[in-house]
Picture 1 (cartoon, protein in one colour):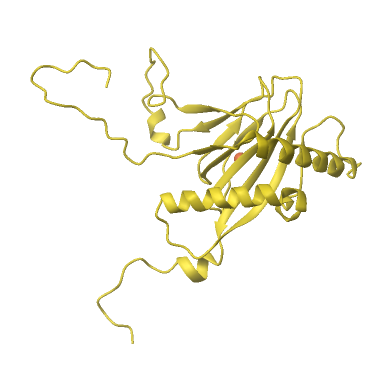
Picture 2 (picture 1 turned 135 degrees about the vertical axis):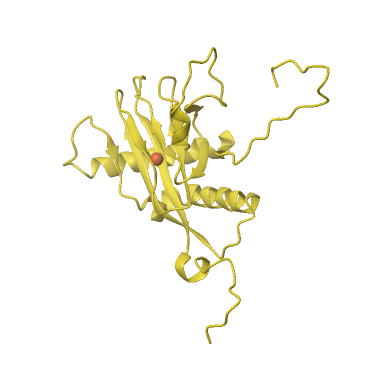
Length: 221
Ligand SMILES: [Fe+2]
């Protein structure tokens, strides 16, 4: 804590209650370099095979990339990372599946407005091509009440910011709760930014996980 502790105080503590967690995983170069090259080549081929797209504009693929062989290595890495997240959170579940996986190819000048990923538990993004000027993703404070009284601050720190910028680089995998609003600042570089976004949800959620977590004391039969 920055504030000076008076002699009358034995100890102080800040309790980070209900933190919003974003998981960062940087892949080793030996893994991500060849994988990204294969992904880039496949995306180029897919774009070429879709002649009716707007020239020079933002490209977004179908949400089924995880079914293509070129994405199976990434699919397995995402699944392993998500399994680790659920283990960390002590979540009890039967199985988790990728419900969507798509590429965003954002040309210079492109930005991505604030959004969430509804109807999923975890979402994330993997970076295939980023460079200076196109290497940030921003997360918005999920507590809208904090904007009601928002005094000027002498310095922006994570604890007083309404938005937190996370630096990205090639081979980086991010995972976060699907409800966490995020956005991508304008691409200020001279090359496209290529990222793979995805959603994860519990398989058969209704059948396996949606029963009440409590028991009544009156029998119905
Ligand atoms: Fe997103």
